[in-house]
Length: 255
Length: 298
Image 1 (cartoon, one colour):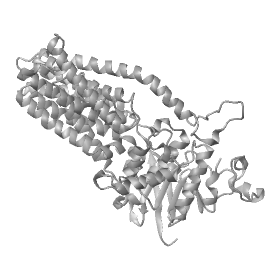
Image 2: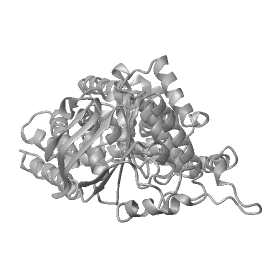
Image 3: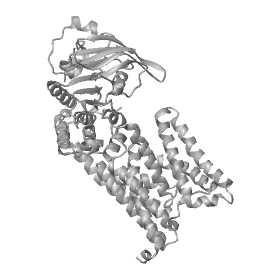
Image 4: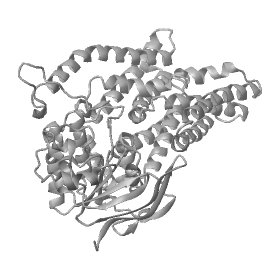
């Protein structure tokens, strides 16, 4: 891991006076796919939001592409997918309009040239939403909505993707499309940090899992083996289930 | 069209059109951020400015602008820092602004709350040539911001957190929206009055979105509605003894109701188009059963 794209050292943060991160160390290497796991309230979303500068730090340091976060300006290299239950604003907006806003980091003075519009079209193609470009985002299902948010992040053609629970509330068809999209991004050399509740269909892509509990890193290494509900229909990915070594890792970490 | 022969009507119509354009143009971003009532709040705060203008014998319009810009900036700061008690702080700002205006004007020599009437409800036909010049400059500023920075403002108003990660200066843009809204309120003060200005910022946008699916179309239709109702209200008040401000607002609400009634069948057709085929093939039903679309939101 000679060339990290994200580095967190002894990061602490609080929300409303309550410590949420209590000294997190985390690195994401170039081309690596790292999953941030943990129960609700373990601090995984806060960790991600501290990286993008949405949560102020009380201690420690964060570097993005080797630059301290405070001085980092090359946001076009970062694609961010926020955690969302609803992304619609108070005014109608089309899928293309929402995805275009992801291109602003590359567009000078907010002018979208042909190359920018092409990039938006490619991002929509990647998530299989090109035919819905002119539809209002209000008319989409939760899964389609999430695909739009991911297209928005991809519109800037980022080298690093940061995703907060991209699979939450997403139907199976969309999950498969998202997994395929991510696979393509990783194949082209993108680095990914994603917050997940469970590994799900993304499991084969993940190089490393970092498990948080109470704002501390509990596990940093190969992803825990999937058991239980991952054996349900719909999880058609094939991987050897060995109940003996799977069970102990899973227990207490993710439930 | 004999009303066009009068200078005061020409000025009134010009002022009305400029308000018809600018109020929905900035209002759409407030509606998008779900801050539809911010214009109303700024209007209340501007009252203190009007009162201060009377007390210091300076122009109430410029004082109202200065005070409402400060008020809008404070509201924006409260939105950042006062997450839990923010609404209480805003309520105090609104009603403090209103009460301050009434108090200051009663302290002014020869001042009474009767002076407030034209600022509260507008007095379009008394717009002077110098008023028109001011309104033109301010309207140019508002149009420049709302059209020139539409992509940035759209991104910030749609999803602030994401906008920050695209490197946009989110705080500066939010402050710019607040200042632009304050400017619009004071510009519109002469036309519809401080108490009714928020209606022109919000209702044309709400009416437009009954018909539209995109932000761009909503913007265009809302501005068109704004121009039609401000012109319509002004002309009506020429022929009938009705106050132009109230006429404009009631016309806007009438347009909203008509468009809503017209749009209901349209929305139904669109909903049907959205749920039939071309959707997700994953959610197919067991034969003989209606496709259960799983609700993903709690």
